[in-house]
Amino acid sequence: MNTSEVVKVGIADYHIVQAPQLIRTSGLGSCVGVVLYDQKKKIAGLVHIMLPDSSLAKSQVFNPAKFADSGIKHLYDELIKSGAHRISIMAKFAGGAHMFKFSSGQDVIRIGERNIATTERILKSLQVEVTGKDVGGHCGRTIEFNPENGKMMVKTVNQGVTYI
Amino acid sequence: MAHSYSINERHHLPKFIDMLKEVANIGAGNAATALSFLLDKKVNMHVPSVHIYSYQEVVEANGNDENVTVGGLSQVSGSLSSQLLLLMSHQNVERWIADLLQSQNEKFSSLYDHMEQSALAELMNMLTGAYASALGDFFGEPLFCSLPAISIDMSAALISDACITQSYDFDELLVMQTSMEIVEESKQELCRLLIFLDNHSLSEILKRCDGQI
Image (cartoon, rainbow over all chains, first blue to last red; front, top):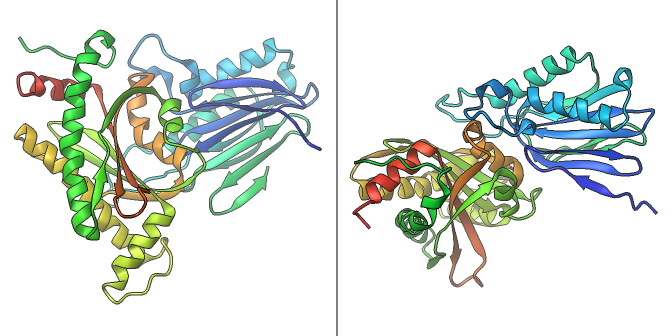
């Protein structure tokens, strides 16, 4: 019987888990859920970011997990502190959808696309290999990552459950 | 001297919450009347609530985050700007739209079909429009309300997307919320209206309320 504990990550938040724990975040719209993991150490962290760039934050003090750039870097550092090896860290991410399409083209701010682009740029700058992603489109996603086997479950309303 | 109010000035808020509730009441009352007229049923409206929530709290306050929900998002612009999100349960909407189409001798197929989507947009437009026009009347300035963009998906994805543009400013946001139900139908919740106010609009509303309420 599988009784693995599932750690839930909220919006603009992050957590780190060790197998047999699972880590999950639900209802990603244009937000992106980024998982960084070390397969050998069976340790994984997940950050649920809302916005691309922390330089656009209007206040000096901000929650790093809210932005892709600061959130991913923060998670990367924390994962290393928790025992992950810099060179073995890999990434999977999902989200960045566009939920509401305005007919009159008012949706100038396509935050989802920018979240995806920034996530990719930051992971590249950290030299983290991306082993899987499920991004864009118009559907909400729930993700659950298993550090035991490095698989990420992606659940959507219309396509059901897939694993990447 | 005109004072500028801000979400961050927590100590000001308690005395303004009642003002905001009154404002929400005016908008939602008008929307409930429109809905009652449209469905030809008696609609009950709950007293609006005003909260300061973190993004996670807004989602949690609205039930299971993976619930499939029908959402319509309108952007209110003019002297106030805000996001108006209308949430309805999938089952309710299906029933409504089926009724609505039947009265036009059309057959209901699926909420994702063209005809149904168009009826749904029209329905949501009436509600959000009624809300915005009541607010506009109250302030004596016209407010514009965009045609709602519709999405049928997990409630957490809909809610977080509706307020995401405001998350640049703060880690918390001000939410005015109202729900409505049909009286005869065992008080089952019909729809829920969520208004996300940015700092500027909050300040504008409170300035106008000073002396009015």
